Image (cartoon, rainbow, N blue to C red; front, side, top):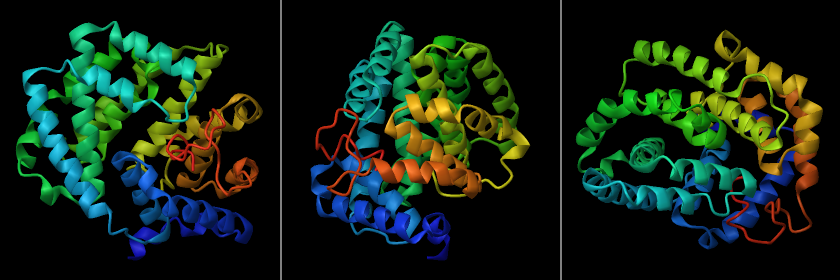
Length: 318
């Protein structure tokens, strides 16, 4: 149980901790309003922070395992439905609508190769979640899926590297296709490290120096947060040695703090605060804690970007 309490120190401030407890309470009372995917997302984060494993996680892991094997079979025949699944998954995710629309349009323009990429990403993401939920026992064909993921990974990270707009327009997905795999024991760690250097070189080249466009700035922030988040196996561990490879990310956040806090969505601001904590930069996270605490409305939670009271739309931020 101790391993799940490693982030407890990050909410040690009594007032901030009480606010976090309040958000947990609000969402736990209304957890049935969330889709199964958002339920597992919220409950798995609760387990990481509080060390409390919900009884729902095993059934959710079983549900996702069965769904993944169904989708795996479907995608062996045709990846046509992967595009609509991707677009549907981005509805109500508390991100900027204009940024999402540009990304949806771009990946739609990529035809079959784009659908193949999304299908691969979906299976890789689901398998990563199943492993983090410690529910892989529910997969009846795990070795077959692992082999398929290993055999296609280089092709799919190459798709991202060869299409600069992939990094710029579907940033989280482009980054995650690399770091989902880095968290698993499917590819040799040396191979991961070798490919990461080329992957990040392509990433930097795709964005260049000009981040004046608000959407590009928005997407760049999501990209670099997810490098750290991916390396942490999605909030499961800290990265005290982040300076070895990722010092430039924290330096960018430091340099651009005022723009981030004035122009970014609540979701990005909260995500960056968490990245500081993952990197054990608790002092630098204090400003973000203060800003996040001010986001919380009278009902005890952070409203979605559209200011409705839809619990599902705001789940990621909360």
